[in-house]
Length: 123
Image 1 (tube, one colour):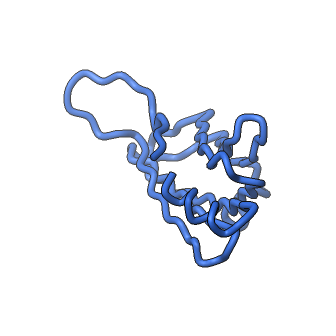
Image 2: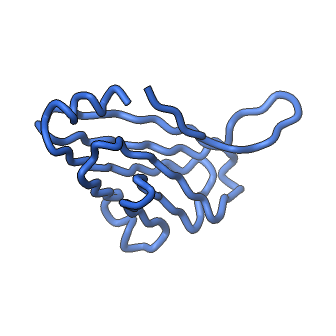
């Protein structure tokens, strides 16, 4: 099993988190997992968030990870994603996120063999 911090914030009273993250994992290809992260901004449309950074740790047995953004989004320069081998994580950065906006990142994670790919899904 694995753990990671999803968000850090302080609250006094009732509060809805500013973002929701949904994940899906496709393990239909041997030696590889395809992880899809869907980020939704829960705050009002009139508000924006600047400088958002999402870090996604990858399993220790991972050989490589290739993040890819939604079509047309990367060209606009509004967001960027990269895998850092030294930190073993994918960093997804946004210049600006508008309220109620939805964003998708797909990460193809490669493993040296099929057994490690199946085991990594449990992490």
